Length: 277
Length: 317
Image: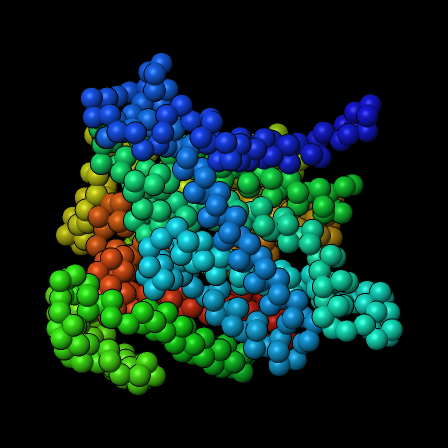
């Protein structure tokens, strides 16, 4: 279904839709002070637990704070945690995966068995245990979630590196005496970024979910800082009187995760040669 | 065959051992906090020292680990720092709750995923396929703890059909047990089905494009015969592997869901251990979940090897 300009809308539709949803969340996160109608911390007990109105589009919470403003500011925390966690997982996993594939033998065995071991823990359990050890804070949530991602990225980086190593230009690089470090970073890394970026989009969605789950359990962002997880957790206590307190943060998480998942799926389709047919 | 089983078993034991080291070191890496948590923030330095000496927390980590492992191997999981209750029996009491929840959720996930995935593959690139794939994307984006909250909002607070939480053993009151378990299981199962739908669809698509299925079609076999007799069995091998990982994931995700529905399972045990910095509780809970996941992977690995036609051929040769 190519248009006159040659742009294949059908091929890119998932990327566009996912990009739009992610764009909305990112815009809210970056421009929160300008987008949010109120401060997320402004208390007004006279207005507590009010339903959606012209003044407060998504109602107010148990302390009279504007729910929309808190949901917008919560996007900041989610995006910060997800960005840093995915970076930790991506950098750590890529370095381990490339090193394992490039050097092979014992190095590969040791590194990949260690990754298998980390992979054997259920993700949320590993994150929760790491948080117990590191202590509850947003920064520690980033580190814990990042560690959870390392094995997944390392397996992908290893498999992609193995494919690249079979190419002739690597042999050529070796034959002209290029150093290992140079080959890894100059020749291999640029050629394995596409699959890693697709994985990163999916990991971003998962990071948002994990951060929310940790905050929901009281292990991530601490009140009064707004996070979708702790908003939902507090909202559950007022479900009968103020259901919007449970619906709004969940909806925000859903839109964000859906956006990143669609983006990941779309990028996979676009970069996968089989899908181009 | 025996060699295969032995190799896998050796790998299992090694991984379990390494996992216990990782858990022990991670949980014990911050010294002192357990004592503060058990004795309160106003505890004196002497009281903390006494507590640590009493529980052996002042000795080198390696010694502590060796002793802990020795006790675990004899079935002794220690006692809770908080209330002095033996951890092992408490864990055994909680295990069936979590097992029931995870199994129930897994059944729901498969009941959704297998027919939908197979149907999508059969209707490849048609309306039904696109709708099912879209549904899987939507389901995969719903946080399970949000779905749990929405279910409570609808079925407990609005319709008043189901209790908000709690646990009654199946043997005591089966109907009550099901009423209390259905919402937690749905929250986990529906979200888990998203991945399984995709895997089932992909596995079936691969099988449906093979020569032997095309031959069956050419011979005039009915759609039912093609799907059930020729495709499902082979599509199940890759599906089973992912489903097992998903079951393990479900077992790990119970931490959040058990907290919401006040289920006295291993997940809420782990959470109590974390909040109170109760190391024996946390370690035992986390180790139990890890042991379960590893055992599951081992069993599935062995079943997949048994089902794999290439291995069957090798055995018969």
